[in-house]
Image (cartoon, rainbow, N blue to C red):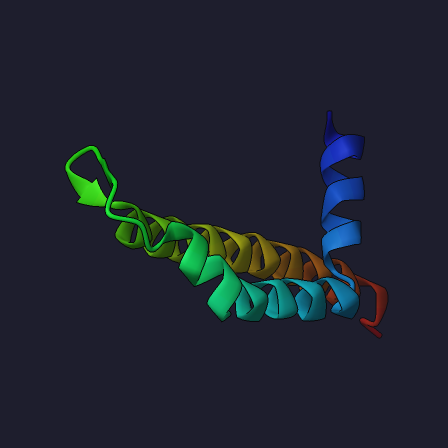
Length: 84
């Protein structure tokens, strides 16, 4: 289980992952996606567009949190390697 966690954290440390999630966040806010969810349909008593934006916001917070955990993990292992 620890090796799986370590592998996931190592993959998340890539700068390309930051760029990919940033671009996906921008694409999520473009007209086609906003138009898809801008319908007069209510889910749980709330408009679909509101739920789409709220879910996207929460997902982006979780992704940033995961990246920060990976960054801390990298700093801990990096400090141990370069100690005199």
